Image (cartoon, rainbow, N blue to C red; front, side, top):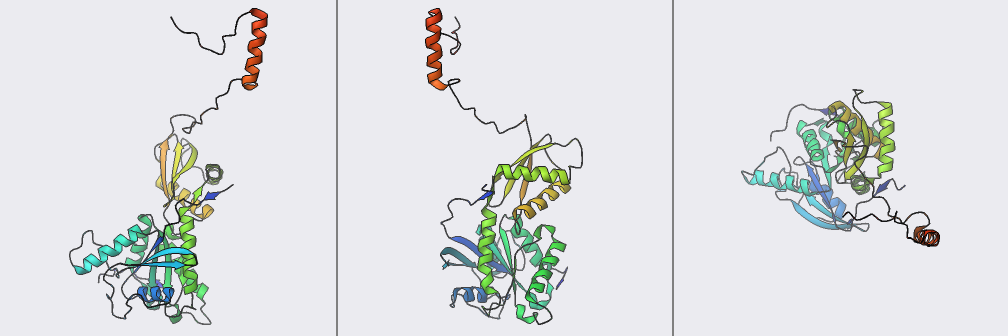
Length: 331
């Protein structure tokens, strides 16, 4: 597969995020006539959206409620994308605007590519990068694999080639889930799509415990220390999920871009954050630890019963109650 530089101008280590009982929004995006609507009809097992060989058949983003093996899914079929517009200026632009809005509201975005062309457009890779920058999780559907897969060129080889090409152009897309399939034949890879979508969404929603994160951080720093010996990274926390967002604490306000990139790639590999953008911020620590744990209030050794015994013993000996447990009032 060749990528063209020409643009198309036409412990519990992890915890799932709560409130997962809502329908999962899944947007299906891609260039015109790559098989998005055909793939949706094949998934649903019925003709719910119009599929045609004529590009531009789908104009509006169509939301389809669906239950797949007990999981509520909100499938969104979108118009074919050829370019980005900040504001719609025509009917075609409005369709593109609706598709971009559906992409931004989705949890998982399935980018459908036509591998029969053997040459991928730069726009498709730009679109994949935009999906990650919006904080969504990406799954790639390499459609029409029947035109390439033979006895000498297997489905897995196709997947490996797609992933390699993506990684060469955008290192942040390494190990992005790729499903080689043929939408007109459900037996050819289509059955792998929804398990990959749910797995991607679960990984995108996970929260890594602070203790596990800091064990990873110590190892990552040991393998590759910061570029300057004056930079001290003390600890890390995950501030949110969807997308995974992490906060580093240390003696500086920012880290070199190359070292942030190293930490991001290490996090992706260690915790399977593939197909999504990991956000990392640096904060200068004001003390030894910004996470101050509230001390448990007690009444001393032995609790209140021990205190009662000490007070009784003091009264018998001196006739006065000990005052070391109370502050003297200032006059």
